Length: 107
Image 1 (cartoon, rainbow, N blue to C red):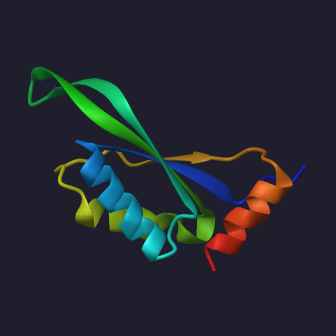
Image 2 (cartoon, rainbow, N blue to C red; image 1 turned 90 degrees about the vertical axis):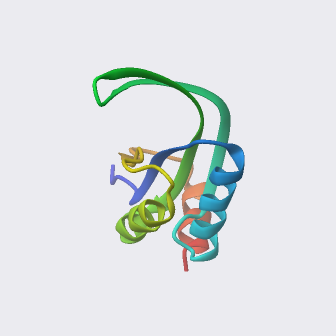
């Protein structure tokens, strides 16, 4: 079985307005086919030696390998965080109709 060239980019944002703005930029530039915004996430992490707990919006952005780096660059350049979460997860398998739509949406 051939793996699709789709990936899911994970990114957190400090609030819904920021998440919507980042998603809109990525979609307008056709760097992502879809952005799912999941408000209500709580992130725990150490920053400069101190345990932090923040309310965040988890973003799931669907794109392909050809647009992956440009999407990461776009998110990083417009993100308010000094070190935003930018993680890429490969899609191992997916519905053929959805994957076709994803690829067509990025053209």
